Amino acid sequence: MSVLSTSRTCSPPFVNERFPVALHGQIVLGIDTHKHTHVGVILDGLGRVSGALQFPATEAGTQRLLAWNQENGGAKIAGVEGTGSYGYPLTRALQLAGVTVLEVNRPDRANRRRRGKNDTVDAEAAARAVLSGQANAVPKDREGAVDALRALTMTRNSAVKATTQASNQIKALLVGSPERLRQQLTVKSLLQLATRCAELDPCSGMHTALRSLGRRWLLLHAEIVELDTQIRALVRDTIPTLVARPGIGIHSAAQLLITAGGNPTRLHSDAAFAALCGASPVQASSGQRQRHRLNRGGDRAANNALWAIANNRLIHDPATRAFAAKRRAQGDSRNEILRILKRYIARETFNLIISSLRPLVALAAAC
Image (cartoon, rainbow, N blue to C red; front, side):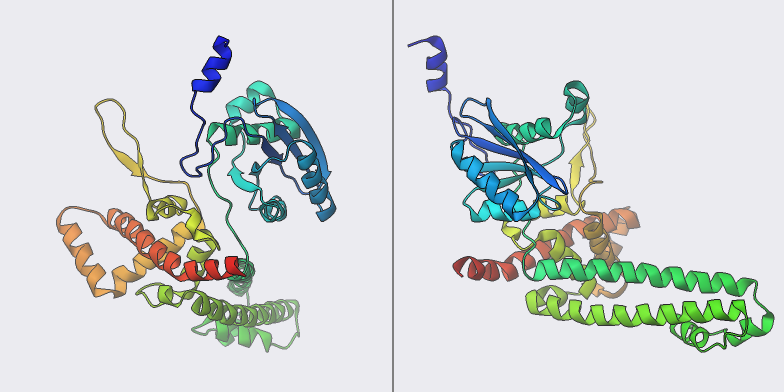
């Protein structure tokens, strides 16, 4: 027996700790996804490129990929780049075909500068990320209530942004308007301001502009109210225990549910969820200096939801106010207290999300 064959026999197979599948000697598929076309690369059991395929980002193209995969040995595990955007339909099709999909981040910039970049190189890098164990994240499932909440929340956020823009334009126009018009539109709420602007007679360019902005604001406001009703119903039907906790509103709960996904069991602990929300400590030690810094990555919308919950509890929740008073006596600042609270809230909400969605996930798998 040669030295090479002996080393291969004695070396243990690679086992991904997050996903315990022995990858030594297995065929691996890597896919780089785009809007119109995808590129797939297959690595054989020795890690050599055995084939590459460019196929359209359609159902017919996905079927072509699956047939090509079977012709080249039938890889049972794939690394896909962009599983949450252009690669999401492809990811679902691969999972339904029995292929385990792992999420792959973009290639390292240093490697891209050194080796160059094209779709085939990126697809090969995705496959090698699976082989090396760097890719170990299970893609987020957006089916069911989570996908509906994501769409509704995105639409609501754009409507809120548009109402803010319209109200700011109304106020800017009023700065240089005649005093009589300003007095006529002096009110205490934006709703009253928009209503009075919408009722103006279009007798001049200023009046016409204010009338148009007022009607726009009222239309958007009605749209936001309708979207809020649907979001509230979905959240209460999906995870009622979350909004029952102090300080957690409908929109904060919806955002945390969107971030966790329809399969939150892919997150192995509350610490992983906190890291996903950018609310976990990160090692920043060097030499004799041992310290941590705040995680500045993660989903910033989820981080903002955690901040809103923590700030709400600091104002209204007696237990949280007592905790904050104790930490201030120990010398902690408000920002430090908020960081501690966000980490605690991430742990609390993760456990509530897991306990509420686990039966739904099991029911969907049984069906």
